[in-house]
Each structure stands twice: as structure tokens, then as C-alpha cells.
Length: 244
Image (cartoon, rainbow, N blue to C red; front, top):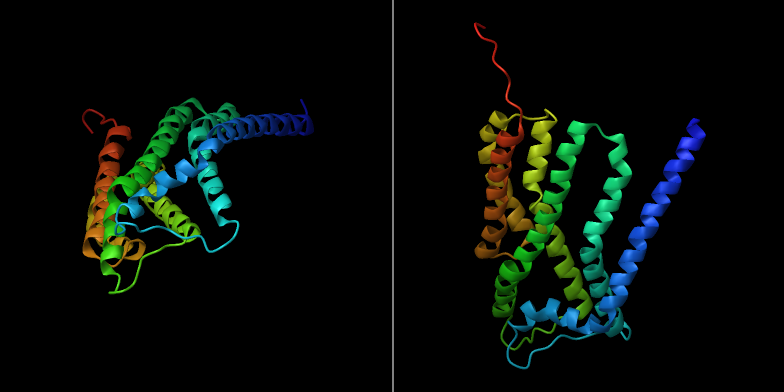
């Protein structure tokens, strides 16, 4: 097979994988669409639970009440279809990988996906109630907290991304060690700087209260330590030569 024919075959396979992923994503989206409003209500619950009795959100644009639940439904459909999408990506790239690379890539993809979901779950159930409670309590006297639903969605998506990416720390640590970029000993030596950096990130990505900062910094530090432990476990040990 010539290089041109090989390239065309790869492009056709890529198109097939993308079409399959798009079809699954569309089917999931259409299945969730009737409950779009319910999905947004579920997403808004952490804030609504902290508002005074009778508190509510507002929509400042005419089309916002329709498009915001639609965006939430698209996000939920993507998360549900993500395992299938990742599987299609894996089927496309797997033939070009060596056996030892396959053994490493599959666990990393699975772990990365699960950790991202864990980060979002942690943000929703643990961080949001604290953050929104602080925001509502900090509102000046006579100011009613009535957030626009589109701005709320943007804030929530940003927090989901921040915590989802933060929870990737163990995967990043393992990859760096396996690639030989850093050693486990070096990771231990820079631990103090990582802890300081974790609290700096907590100050940047959370509201200006100590509790929220700790809720991002402490998991980031613990995940870093978990990455070191996993790196020790997955890194091949050097064989010692008798008498050397």
C-alpha cells in the first residue's frame, strides 16, 4: 500500500470514528432533551439552596431561558457519551502503539476520565455549597442575590474545569516520571513548592475565603502525593548486577 493510499485509509477510519461518536452524542442529547429544564434545576440547586426563602435566579436575555438549559443538556450528553468517544479515539490510535505503550495508555485514559468526573463531583457536592453560602452571606444589607442563569452557568463550568483539571495531577505526575522528565526523588524534594503553589491556585480559583482556598489546595496536595505513590508502583525498578 502506497503512502497516499495509507493516508486515505487513515482519514476514512478517522471519519468513521468521528461519525460514530457524533451519532452517539446526538442520540444521548435527544434522549435528555425533554428533561433539559430539570437538568438545569439540578445544576442550580447548590445556589438555590443557599438563597433566602423565595430567592430565585433571573434571565436578562429573551432567549436565555431556552438556550441555557440546552447548553446544560449538551454538557450532560457529552459527559455520558465521553467513554464511547474515548473508546473510538483509542481504537484509532491503538494500531500505531507498541505493546508497552498500550499497557500504559489505557490505564491513564481510564484514570484521567474518572479523576475528571471526581473533580466535578467534588466541586458540586462539596465546594459549591461552601462557596455559594459565603457569597450569599457576604452580600451587603439590602442587596438581593439574584444571579443571571447564563452567568451562573459560566461560573459553574469554570469551576468544573478548574477542579477537573486539578484532579489530573496524579496522571501528570505518573506521565512525567515514566517519560524520565523528573524522578520520584525530585518530586519529593520540590514538595514544599508544590504545597505553596496549591494554595496560590486555591486563592486564584476560589472566592476570597480561607475555607474555599483550603478546599482546592488540600486535594491538590493530596493528589500530588498520590501521584508520587503511583509513580513508585508503576516505574520499573533497575536491576542490580551481583558484585557490582
